[in-house]
Length: 355
Image (cartoon, rainbow, N blue to C red; front, side):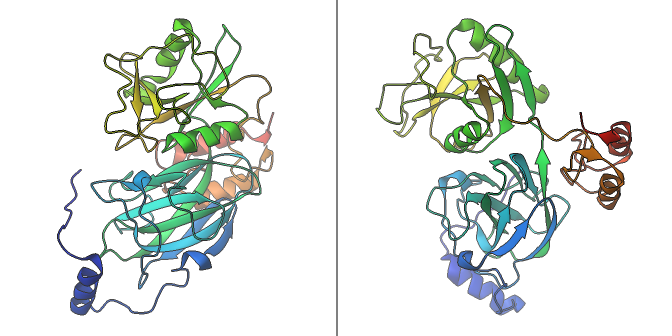
């Protein structure tokens, strides 16, 4: 997918010129300022409008898509997580605006480079992202446009998502889960929330296990975040859980710190070798491989428990039917992108208390 990027024009002047022609609203959106975010909580569908909004959030390397690292005409929400786990925020099917979206820890104006996740295009020109949340914690959701001239309205959904991959290594007994998380730092923070770290690789056997179980997830070659990093001391790579650095599997010529700032490691899903990368991951999507040793956190919600109350009942059925035909994460039980009869069948099959 290609986007046209207009260069050589001062964004504020361009916005003024366009509004002069098309009579843009001059009234700011209610939650235009990051200091005045609209409070929301739990899972569900939430309305937004960027009509008349200005841009007050920071540009960020984690939001670099199609040569643009800013989110324009942004509006802000302060969301409180109802439970711990992976969360998906999606604008798919909720608007025709060419959107861009980010999530930050806490509420209020986010610090520079504090992005947990950012996305431009995930479903046509609309955005979808995932991040790890802790029960009762608050997060800032920023919704805006790819273009300085983009304004619109619609809705976004917030829902719980089970890990994409969840396997146990029979050799060491450790649990490994796969999550889509934007930056290495956000992936490591998410791993710690789950009671682990990004994967530490002790030998060829463990490297092969990760490569075989994650490298071609979904039939697509993946780039995998692993824990190896030299953030503290350039050139001295370490594992975040203290695993001894007795084994490495670098690709030829790596690590090379190309252009400086390549302080974290990824695994290539094709051959299982490693490469050093900047924390943002550049323009590549990554699957974070999280390793959990010992006591694991509570399991993800059981199939069909849309409202996360510990049982599949009529309340869940009502929510699923209300989401019919939409890309609502918590009701899309088979994760095919839409709520359909297949999801209804899975819910009815799980009827009753969660095991």
